[in-house]
Each structure stands twice: as structure tokens, then as C-alpha cells.
Image (cartoon, rainbow, N blue to C red; front, side, top):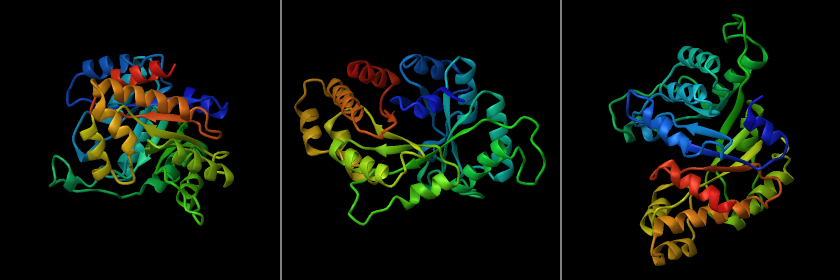
Length: 296
């Protein structure tokens, strides 16, 4: 059992952070960035070609973090690998100490840094979750060949928080749970009232008894960045009150970290919420560390 799964199981507020692997054939930058959050987060996500851009392999980065004493959350996309490669990589990841998985579809290569790349999508995210569960629980490959040492995966899925209409049902998330998801990390949510209503509806539907929900938040660097998120990130709303605070601050980055800390404090009080997932793609992980320390 991973430390993250143990914390979620025991209803303790969990914190995960995200790191983008470097464009480098060296572990130095990755480990230097991870050092900022050592001891203050429960696990570190490493992205798998986020935005369809090339970085160090998430599988390699996760192995490096595990070898250095961190608990990784390995992001796995369906975009770049067929089922043979996915199965082989999952077994290899577990052998190197990567047991937490966040399974994603992956962004369209046409939007990335090598738009001529051919997407694979042999399996979708639900099928990869089923694959990981089969490797763990049945100790067999899809072909039926036995796995001598089954991987002890803790399987995660992505989700989108929303202000639920009266007739809304969390069917999409339930289908991921049915395919093996045990935790979920969401897109950014900067609205505590929306977060409360969202988690309450999930709790009422029995979802939070089946899966640990980690709400996405992050320190915003500026008012301009907040407006960009509103215009370009599907489903994300940065409230005007937060934009006004960033705009009026003498140090917008410091204000963004304080706002993130306040959100952590408020989200800790939401019944049924398992924790938060902190992303800071435009900053170094020291911004995440500062926000957590400010939150106490």
C-alpha cells in the first residue's frame, strides 16, 4: 500500500504536487525541484508529455524520484503507446517503485511541439485502468500469460469539478471507478462554494466512499495569468475577486501563493474531500512549497 493510498483510506487530508519533467538527459533539475516539496507533500505527480510536448519520460522521472526516496504519481497517457508498450511500461514502472498511477487520454499531438507526430490511442483511459487492475488483481497479461510478481497499483483518474445542476449525476466518474479508479485528481477549482457543492453531491451519490477526490488548485502568478486560464482552460473559472487581489497586489506572485494557502485551509474543512492536488506549471515547485507552509 502506498503512503498516498493509506492517507486517503484513513480519511487524512492528502496533498500531492505536480512537477513537469525537464527537457534534459540528467536527473539534476528534476531532483532539485522535488527537493522543494520533500516532506510536505504525500506524493509528486510527474506529467507525461503534458500539452503534447516532449520532456523526459514520465516513467523514467517517476523511477528517479522513487529511487531518491520520493513517492511518485506516474501520469500515463494513452496518446503515445499501444497496448503492448503500455503493459510493458506499467510492469517496468512497478518494478522501479512507481505504484500510484494517474491515467489520462493525453493531449492532441497537433497542439504540441511536434504536430506531425502520429497519435496512438490504441486503448482509452478507462481501458488502461482496467489493464492496470487486471495486472494487479488477476496477475495476468491481457493475453492470459501469468505475471509472476503482480504490481500493487493505486489507480487514479482525472475529473472536472463543476457547480452541479439539479439533475446532474456523476456518471462519468462512476464509470471510471467501475474500471478501477481509486482516487481522482481534478482540474483547477478556485471557488470554495462550488467545491463544497460539488463534493457534497459526490458524497450524496456515494462517490466519496468509493474514491478519494483531490481537488486541483495552484498559486497563480498574475492577474493576466488568471485571465488566460479563464479563456483557455476548459471548465476553469478564476473568480473576479481573486483577479482583483492579484491586480492590486504589490507582489502578485506572493499574493497568488497566499490565495492558494487560503484555499487549502478552506478545502480542508469540506466533508468528504480527500485532499488537494497542487499544480504550478508556470512556476518552480518552491511556489507550491510556500503555499503549503503558509497554509500551516
